[in-house]
Amino acid sequence: MIDFNSQRPSKLRRAGEKLQPQGNTLFEFEEVEIVERRLTESPKAASRLNDRMAWAIAVFVALIPVPYGANRPLAWFVAIAVVALLCLVYFIGIMIVDRNRPSQLKNYWVIVALGGLAVVFASLQAAGFGVAPSFSQSHTMLAVPRMLSYGLIFVLVSEVCTNRFRTEKLMRTVFYIILFHAAWALLSLSVFGDTLLLAEKTDYQGVATGTFINRNSFATFMGFGVIIGVAMMVFEMRSPAHRSPNRKSKRKGMTADVAFVGVLVLVILAALVASASRLGLLSTLVGAWFTMVALLLRTDVSPVRVFGLTSAALLLGLVGFVAVSGQEMLNRLVFIFVDSDTRIELFKQSWDMVLSYKWMGVGLDCYQIAFEQFHREGLSSDVVWDKPHNTYLTLWSEMGLIAGSLPMLAVLVAFVMLVRSVATRERSYFPAAAAAGVIVQGAIHSMGDFSLEIAANTYVFVIIVALGLARRSRAREV
Image 1 (cartoon, helix red, strand yellow):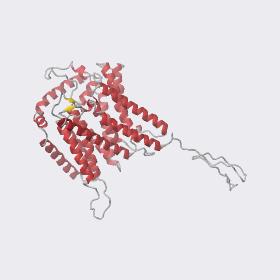
Image 2 (image 1 turned 90 degrees about the vertical axis):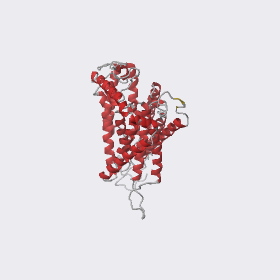
Image 3 (image 1 turned 135 degrees about the horizontal axis):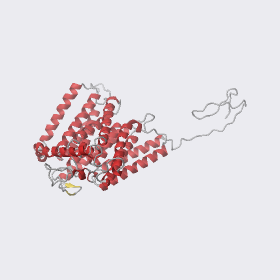
Image 4 (image 1 turned 135 degrees about the vertical axis):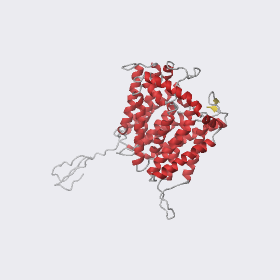
């Protein structure tokens, strides 16, 4: 090029390079290198990859409950393979299109570390290195990859959802997927002759189970949808309204969108009630109540009004849905205290097993085998007691009090982070509120059932929590 300033010659340079004098010649010709931004440095390509992977995760959420709630070894193998493949494709793709993309793991390192330690301990149980060997190494060796896949799906969602619009869209998509499963469950119960995947049921006739075998597991899945729907409604109602001379309120309030989502929530709630799951209904209502409280407090509603209105809504909702429930639900509510005797006895005998193996546990997925040594009078010998109907007791009995508490601590840390996110985020905080409510629901239901030990529910639970925690990259939002 021509340099018209012989005293201060200049040169085309790349960003970050310093100017170097080129001599005193009047005419200076230089080679100009046109540097293209390669695909390996393209945030837009990374954004497209994230969008496609978000759709892949949505398809996974839709299909994973179909094979009986993924509660069979074959379904576990398929789910583990799919999750591993998605992670492999995604991280190889990111290395190709945007290798300088910052990782999100540093934002959740405590959660990942706690979960990783639990996987390591279970692996040592299966191998028998340094800890008491599992009662059945084959059972534990099959359970370890499944537990690892829960962590992988958490990491994948966290990396994919660094854009708040993508996060909100995926959370809403999960809601509509659960709505579809609710509609199918109601059709299976009423139109198709109370079938399970169009085949004859062997258990839980007369109640909705959808594609799940157990009604309580199905109720937990429905509860996820109810809580997400409630979060969508309250967030929309409390969002800032467009300025208008005729509008007095600064918030949107009741809109057609809110009413539409409310109708859909009622459909999911109807499927939940049709499951006749007592604890499923109670835990869902409490989780929805918590979500409402969190969102209303976040939008500057006075605490007195929040707790008064939401508590009244919770009580009316509980009484109203019990009143319109089917005969099966009413019968189960009447006999709740009679049924609790057996459950309490099961808890006692399971706790005895926990104390006998309090440090090392009996091995992941080995409760049924080990409990045969502790089964005594008070529980029927005609029933196979494969689970203690309490997820906390399951973890403690299978992994010991210390290692078994690691997954609980990971969820507790996630819950604290979610509540903090609801309080501090400026824009989209409804995914965090929904995820916090889902944790409350799961924590309550896990006290009296094993719904979160069913693979389909665990995958969806982890995905919802990861969506609630997801935050945009500080460097860029793609």
